[in-house]
Image 1 (cartoon, rainbow, N blue to C red):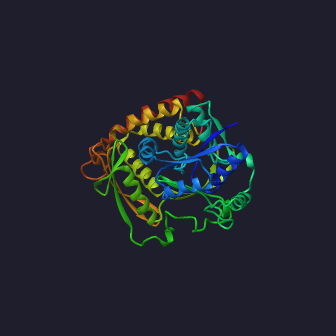
Image 2 (image 1 turned 90 degrees about the horizontal axis):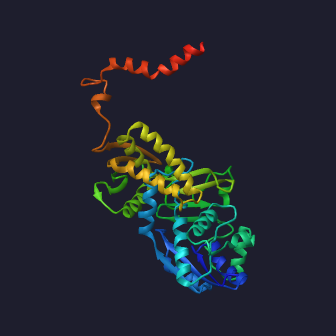
Image 3 (image 1 turned 30 degrees about the vertical axis):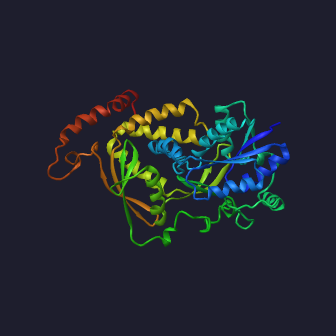
Length: 399
């Protein structure tokens, strides 16, 4: 049985209750680990809360730079959207959390790590598979899978033990947030007949109450990564932070989707991802300007595989590394600027520019200055359709 446990700690209901529960169930010391990935909370208060509840020590790691440079940049290059919608804002934090759990466990001589994931969610898979890939000898404790509390019973347990929690039975949302996005679950959102109310949204305005005047933003890219905003060179963290505010003000970045979880459950997921939505939209537009057709089609198919791989918890795999090697090559020409108009929840392309642009007006135009020899199309069409016409003759196909 574990004697010292490192718990991935967010300061929310599940992990706050888990501190006390692990102590009682396992008679073990608990060290909490909290990662700063840009979530807008008082991390010193979170650390103090863990100690007040009874943690032996509370570790806070500034992981913002690592998160952006080694995780967010990769999903930008891949336009990674699970099921075409979700930009993996929570999913990509889990392998980073797992890595830091293993490092902290080794530092403190712990024989186990723990998390606050439920038994029907994806995060349990992501964290546990990642931990085992990094250190298969560590024991893994999943309190929520063991204790069987309902949400209401968990709140009662917290109240009984004097554990302060940021939820109530009237507002029982489960929220996870970082620089790249904010996910919202539970409560009234589980009723598919109900439109999400405004109270759980923090980063985005309703499009109905967004400004009546549009906002123009210009994003500059180098090798597929945003490097400037509105003509000013900025670190990616600052670009993301600024776009979260700008796009959120204009109602951009709300997602309400039916999502297929890895464990086989369909769930309703609500996200606020203003910067992620704008950046991936702009990045994709720039790729369409600079990449040849067949490469774009291939990359689109591999983007889906990459997003699914991350969603399914297989970050520490050779397949991810191989896909990223491919994406890195494709990004060599993804340089330029995309100007967007943000207006009441919509994103509209205003301007496109790149030194590697494959768009040639003299070829595309139907006006004066057209250099395309249309007569040559006849031969192209004949050769392109030759396999079909040959097959039709042999098989005797009739309309």
